[in-house]
Length: 281
Ligand SMILES: NC(=O)c1ccc[n+]([C@@H]2O[C@H](COP(=O)([O-])OP(=O)(O)OC[C@H]3O[C@@H](n4cnc5c(N)ncnc54)[C@H](O)[C@@H]3O)[C@@H](O)[C@H]2O)c1
Image 1 (cartoon, helix red, strand yellow):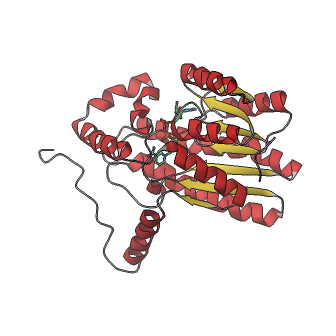
Image 2 (tube, rainbow, N blue to C red; image 1 turned 135 degrees about the vertical axis):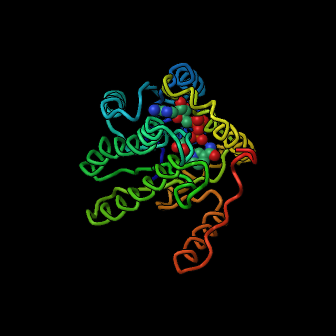
């Protein structure tokens, strides 16, 4: 799909990968609908892109709520008449696998999985009806291998990979011009490790957990060593234009961990995890 003159909806569009992709798509002539739960950064992103000549609206909302995602679709149709691409990208991280309160699991799975499900339900019927459309779902390399200290996040990203593969197969059976891409980034320099800024306030006391703090320090270092979100945005555009399913921002790492898992399934050693917990924990 060429993006010029097309309309793209991007969730989590006020920051990081979503914002970089909005800038990339705007440069290619797409109309944009940015969704985000953070109203001030969303308004700033819309202003910035408008000042640069893009046609863009912002719709504040929570992707975990079906009604908010359908409202975003309706706002997009009212403004631009059609939608051709949805980038289900909003996401949060948080929570260890052991001892994490269920409400934190619900928050992470709500944003990362329900957010994608809501995007698929809101937009795929529209795309099938018009016989044109592309869905891009943001998963992660953490959707290809279990990572210590990240149970809720890994569970959510494995779910996004699984539902994207199932969607790929179902779309192929329809024979329609509707396609799906799954984005599995390695580390990218964004605010993902500050996801707690959008955490429901009754959950923030969890952040004082010493092991959670130690894991966050490691995650901070990893994210800060990551690639520029503009590079990911270019990969997203290239995959949409070329109609490719997988985007592996670090192909070597993603394929190596997948091969290691395969070896493990065949009776070999499990992929080695680095020690995540503080020595005195
Ligand atoms: N940065 C990385 O290293 C990395 C690696 C793999 C995958 N990812 C994934 O990339 C996606 C984008 O994250 P990012 O790295 O750009 O982080 P980011 O924090 O910079 O951006 C995420 C955006 O999502 C928004 N958001 C959070 N909760 C929301 C909700 N309930 N409804 C609507 N919007 C919400 C935030 O306000 C923010 O603008 C996420 O799905 C993340 O899991 C990131």
